Length: 213
Image: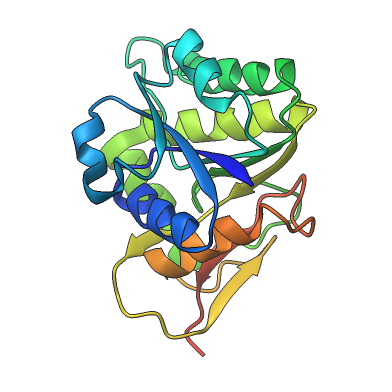
């Protein structure tokens, strides 16, 4: 199966790309600087550009069966309410090309469903992000709202702090409860890949974290 990975040279994306290739997926990706693909440059089909370039994005996703996105939001500091526009354009591109499956990374500090449990740790994370980068929180909330209105088979994966700590095998995904305030990047990448074939979290925004138990 051929898939698109967006954000393939980022912290999560580079791990996701490596694991996807290990599992035998054929990968297309959109990158500003192809040299950042390193040893994977010859193993993927890449388009040079960025997600705000509609023609480049469309060229990247055409012919693939699923899109996995680890892209951060593009922030318009002068108009935070417009920061979700690039993401909305991406969703429109997928709908236009009949690509149904989209797995995207959000964050544990924005909403994603009804009757969520806002633990103390999760509230502290939200306060911190509000202080250091409120526009990111606004943009991520907008992305979720865009997905809810779309016709895609979407899953919005919401991690807390992402670390390179050694995986402990106790990874938890839950729609209402956040197990802890951190998650291992390799566990997260594995979960993202699992969503390509799974229908469990379609139309949902699971909170994902490493269990303390």
